[in-house]
Length: 508
Image 1 (tube, rainbow, N blue to C red):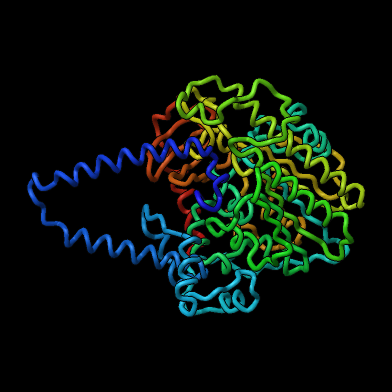
Image 2 (cartoon, rainbow, N blue to C red; image 1 turned 90 degrees about the horizontal axis):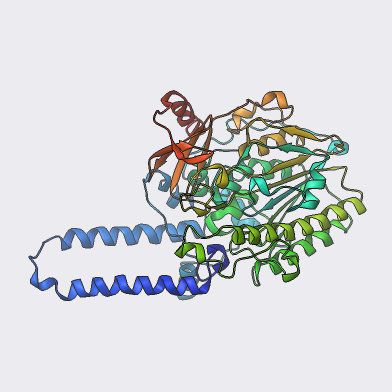
């Protein structure tokens, strides 16, 4: 990420240099210890240490190759290794391909022959049974509707209003607004995974072990119905194999990915291509996934969009003073969301002008939330806890020809969106339980008032039951989803066990 996707880290060059200073100090301490080690008693562990280090290096090299070529014979067992972070170095593979091109050939992920051969590889049985049965989907050509999925990076649930997102708010007045909606993750990877696969984030490692084989049923099914699948993003979805998992074999001309400039410039470039495509004659029904990232820290936007003030002078100041005034940082975030909202308004206008608006299902949401020390516990950004500020997000859905607004307060989740689209747009008649942990949220009667959910970050996993969070994995904690300081003294082991069972129903 440091080399190829620096903006994805969300910190400035100054903070990176500061981190390098800290690392240098740590290295200096280790060198001092090494220099004086001869004065200490000798421990004869070097053979074991060398063996473990060599084994680790071999294992990581195997994963580098396995992830590059999407070879599940290397990667299918990785999810079973607790706390084992596999190395997926694109830079190292570039060097290996140059040094040994015969051993490590250049193969495009979009290459039809390569992917088709990969999908036909039966040497290693997959670990997932996804879906449990063949999908039964049928919809006539006259009934096929377009689908636009518009995702805003780090968009808080309380930032969908007439002041921050006026175009989206106006759009919501003729749509279904889900006011108690939760992402599958407090980080992008798990949030997008749940959104596109309809599975709990616990399954992501297993899907990642063979991403083409376990491509999202949402895009795979729509593609089989002659939908044109396109992606427009300023994020690097190759990371964690998201691109392959979400879109499978997607043509290069249908994967629009600008990352060369500041995020707000990349976003406008992405949207300009989308607008051009919308204004061109459409010969097929389409599914367009759009993911804009200006609203990711450090919140980029053109100067004229600085509507909310004051704004922060140093975007990393909260790292050095976690109880700093949060208002300037929130204003920065609001300004970036308002900028993206303007781009969304242009998309709506294009849909209306080309008379595609009424024939399109439009979904507007976020990958996760963003915290600004709301709990007064010193937490900022995302990926650090599972309170509502980091995992509760806006969700607005307009069905084709919908005119009447609906406000739903029952709990919904990202894992519900894929089965909702597959049922209502693709005409799939399979029981949702055969391919998703979610539900079809149409009609509203299908939704339970409070549903237990699983939410993950990069390091932790949480069970959300009623309003209680039960963290597990690297950290074990329990608190109220609305208030981090409100600790839970009792664990609901019965409901936790039911959720744990959902984590294995799609395993072979």
